[in-house]
Image (spheres, rainbow, N blue to C red):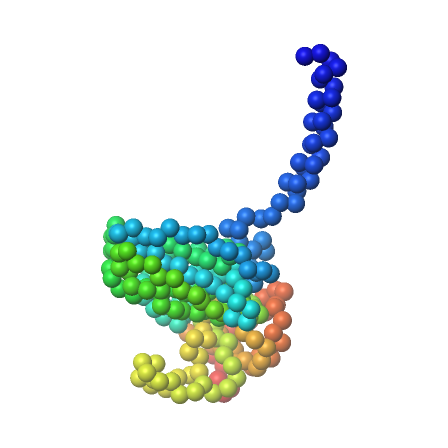
Length: 275
C-alpha cells in the first residue's frame, strides 16, 4: 500500500475514535443491575423485566415482582427471601438460614425469580420440592418486612406474585452494654406510643400482648439495629440478648433518616417500664 493511500485511512480512524469513546461513556446501566447506592429505590420509570422460560416437568418456578404501593413502579435493591416456614417475629428482618430456600436483591426491574427442581435440597438433604407452601419475604433497609404466599412446591408449576410495599425512613441505633462494650444480639423494640388493638386468631390465642408484636428486632454483632418507621411518637425498649439491663424511653421520631446511629447505653440495673 502506498503512503498516499495510507494517510486518508489513518485520518478516518483518528476521526472515528472520539465518537466511539463518547458513546461508551454515556451507555446506560444493564437492566439486571441493582441501585448504585446499595439501598432500595423506586425506579424512575417502568423497566421491563427479562422474559422467563417456563419450568420443565420436574421444576417449579417462583417469581416475585416488587412494586411501590403508591406508584406501581418497580423497586430495586429490596431483599427477597423464599422461605419454607413463616419466620418468627424476631427473624422477619433476616430469617434463619435453615428456613431460606433462595435469597437475592431485586434488580432495577423489581423482579426476582428462582427455579427449583425435584433434586434441589437444603444442606441437610431435605428436598425443597415437597408439595408444601413456600413464602416470599421482602425485607432490608427501608422496608417494614412483608410476607406473602409464594405457592406450593409442585413440579411443573409457575407462581408469579406481585408484592406491593413502600420504602420508609430508617432510624438506626447502636446499643452498648453497662460495661461500655457493644451489645451484640441485643433485643430492641421501637413501637408506636399507643395501645395495640386486640389480637385475633392464632395470635389472640397466645393471650395478652405488650404491644410489641412485629416491632422487635435483634441487633447485629456490632450492636447495630435499625427500624423502618414513619414520623411519630414511639416507645423504645432495649435489653441485652439475655433480657437483662432493660432500657426504656419515649422517642419523638421526625421521619428523617439518621446520618449516624443513635447511641443507647443499657443501665446496670433495669429501668422500670414507664408505660
